[in-house]
Image 1 (tube, rainbow, N blue to C red):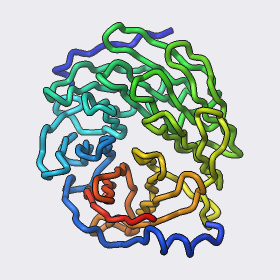
Image 2 (image 1 turned 60 degrees about the vertical axis):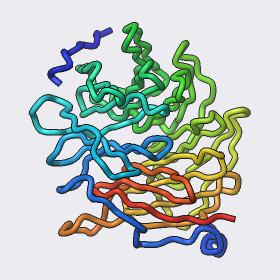
Image 3 (image 1 turned 180 degrees about the horizontal axis):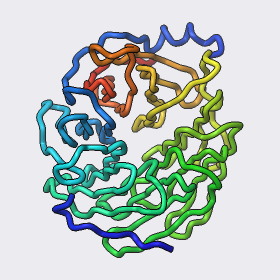
Length: 331
């Protein structure tokens, strides 16, 4: 087994559409928008409480934004003064730490001090996705080799999950760091225990699994493939709760998050769309379209991150470099 090489920090819808308009509606015009990346963004993450956004920009490194006031808290450089190539970002549920990565290395940042607390390079395969637990106690790294690594920075403990046989596309981690969800090109998503590597549930799909997400309260999991299966699972029983209802023959999700009350799932796509879904029925209850970056062809944008704010408002961060705020209404 190859060892991690630590680097000093200073290097551093079926026909249910009638229901849609009745409940949530939608719009192509945001209530409010802020420019967070002048030349566009490579990646972004929004905190669970939707008060913080971390954006990897084409020209200005990694910026931490306070969404309530639209002010910069920190500006970080993942690898010193070199070009910014960060394509993965995740904020811990308790807003304590952020993990960032390019294809070859990942870094852990303290959100209270703004300082980096570690930088590690992986030589054997490229990084596909990352996640971090509360207080930075564990970091999950999905790789192109099909392996998923759970790493504890303080103790140096490293567990390799070998359940997948092909490339990992998406991972997520419970706030306490005890449970991981991973999906890959082998048509499977696994929920597994990071303390033992034991598989708790196996979720089968008919094509490669492109997106997974855990409910932070531990009630549900979301797994979506590259064709028509986008399923919500009950983590108490392992049984399917719903399969999202949509008319497209194929729908890809770039991000997904559950509401704090567990009633809704909010997703983003590589084609500008923001969609709100009812967890129990799988029906869509609203759709919005983010703004593309001016001058780009085709006129589109990838929705990198979404979040639920207070007073029935949503927020999104996209490749256009904009933070956009939306209103939704439910029954």
